[in-house]
Image (cartoon, rainbow, N blue to C red; front, side, top):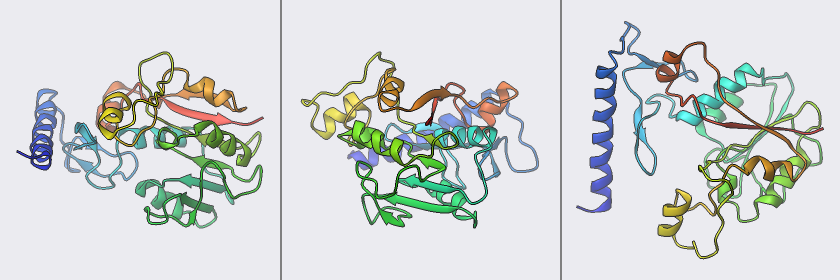
Length: 253
C-alpha cells in the first residue's frame, strides 16, 4: 500500500469514525438536513468531513470548505463587530471562504495577497517581510496559519504592525500553538520528514509555543488570545469548533 492509498483508507475510516460519533451522541437530525451546521455558510449536514495532514475527523464543512479554526475565527469576528463601511482589508494567503465573504462586500478595499502569484485569489504579490503599502493603512489584517512558514517571522510581524491602523485597526494573526513554554526553532530540523515530526507539517519552519504572544508584543502589538464563546456546549459540536481554539487578536496604540 502506497502513501496515497493509505491516506484514502484513513480518510474513509475517519469519516466512519465521525458518523459513529454522531450516532453515539444521539445527535438530532432536523428536517433541514442534519445535526451539524456551518456558522459561516449556514448549511446543515450530518457530519463534517475528515481533513488535514493527519486526517482529523469531523473537521471540514462539505459545502464551503471551512475547517475548525475558520469557523471559530468567523464567530469571534462577528462577536467583535469586525465590519466597518469603507474599510481596508489586507488578507495574506486568502482562504477561499474568507475571500468570498470579503469580496462580497462592495464597499471594502480588499487586498488578497501572497508571495506566490499562482496561489488562490491573489490580487497582488506581496512579501510579508516587505509589505508594499504605506504605514497605518489597514483597518483589518487577516494572516492565519502563515507565520509558521516564514523564516524571518519577526520582520513579518514588524511589517504587519507598521501597516495596521492605530487605535481602531485589528489584526488576526493565528498560528498553530504547541503545548510547550517556548517556540521550537532548530536549524537541524531541516527536512520535510523532520519538520512534519517536530513542527506538525512538512513546510513549517518552527513550532510556536506559549510564548507566541510575547513574540507579538516584542514588535509593539497589544496581543491577546481569545476563544469563540457560545451560549451552550452543544453548539460547539454542531458548529464543529474546538471550545479551546485560541484566536490571536492584535491591536496598535
